[in-house]
Image (tube, rainbow, N blue to C red; front, top):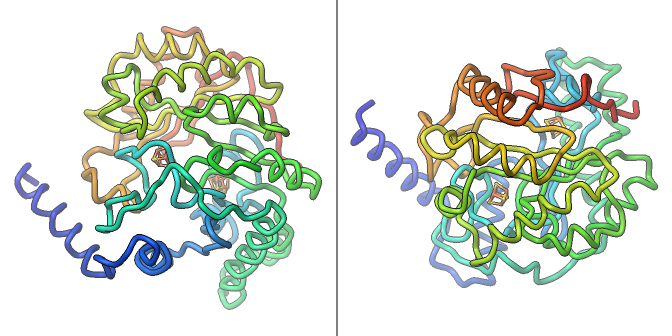
Length: 346
Ligand code: SF4
Ligand code: SF4
């Protein structure tokens, strides 16, 4: 496809998207109508005022086709017992090009993404998320390919991936949410963009594993790719990297790789890794899904071989070793450990 055709195709997709939604309505009404309407079409289950659960494709793959996600392969998390959720569905401190969430402006409606206006309690979010997961699972009852043992187990989820969309540290009681989840027997993976180091340092409870997204090697690329919503975000991200070693839980630097956008300057990535000294690095390809389709073309997804090449260069510069990979998800795991720590509790 030529560059012009690609651009036309993107414009066409954006117009089709807009045609599917109501827009031009007031700020208050937009979240209720435009956003929630568009998100429900993408199979989000909205929970309370600012949270959501979405079926991860690997939940389906595990129950129907006995294929599991790379986090099961790496860390023992059971895909069929995992809830993928967010307590900050519409809210984030960045507007990454590669993000699959609906960002302010995507659907011709704008809102303040930096503040959650009406804060739900951790208990309500957990109850709502469990109900949403149960609803998701009812869809499997009529499927002749359902693995019934896994289905029964799935009804008692054991892991929560706080990673769906948005920046979770914008939700003030995040530590309480994690604590309550752990009390109820869940393990948790928390994914943050690291722009709010103070919130992270004051978490009342650490997650089972903490991810910090580092998707640019320097400030210039960071501004182009991650599009921070406040001027000192790069400095703040670097502060977070500096405090990563104070966490007791395993830590991960997650790099979402977007072709022709953030896959160069490996030396500078290596310096960021050195500062954070994480337990792992996950180098992962951008996936052309969700609302990212409005911002990036299909050709921006690197192949697994390209992710591997990047990971090999990073390994050479950092001394980390490639210890596993999942070509289906185009992800490579690096670590100073010989083997990843298994955190799956079931
Ligand atoms: S750990 Fe992540 S990829 Fe695996 S099932 Fe849960 S949400 Fe999906
Ligand atoms: S930090 Fe995460 S949620 Fe926020 S815009 Fe980037 S990818 Fe999306």
